[in-house]
Length: 300
Image (cartoon, rainbow, N blue to C red):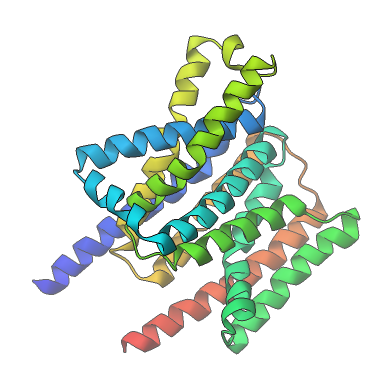
């Protein structure tokens, strides 16, 4: 009986996590619909409407009191403030990349993100790497280096997305609060700045708010839903499945984005890109299998 309940719970967890990754993978389609609006304004709207939606969720789930209680913890507020800046940087780069026809480069960023997380663990927490983790990092670094040599430029979009999100995850681990409370605090901190920014642009005749139609306005309002729903699904899924399974599922998102970039948006994908991505995929296979077998050995 317990075994069947565990399997059922695990299936639900896999469904939630896969659904979250799938939504994230298709987000370029959503941002492309808003490509006429500058990335900075889209970011501001995303923050504001995410905060509005998450407050509605907290009200509905009767967690507003838990949210308010967090303000008495100075350490939590400091860490969440850092998280809010990092995730805002990540969101801005991603929106800009998508609407500037760099979806493929953005997808690379999320492929190498787990490896950057490991690297940060080594640098900051002096964590020890096993042999396979070292090999995976060498393959990933070679893949990025190959792009630099062949194109003569650093894939800064990929690197900045990976570093900002990995750093966000690093500080997020230091905060022991529920995911929904965390995103509420993060968006709350950035909402006043976002509001002031939008008003400032409107007053100076630089804003797009007065020029958009009803359909675009509805899309902007939906940015909160598009942001919060996958985060909630991911949080629910993460509670039910092992980290090794989450590790595999998180590659759904960049894979979908990569496919969209190549076949729908018709971005250039040369033989050099195939070699570079191939090296990174080899790195991820080694890294994921290493994590999987480590978890299995710990359970046995």
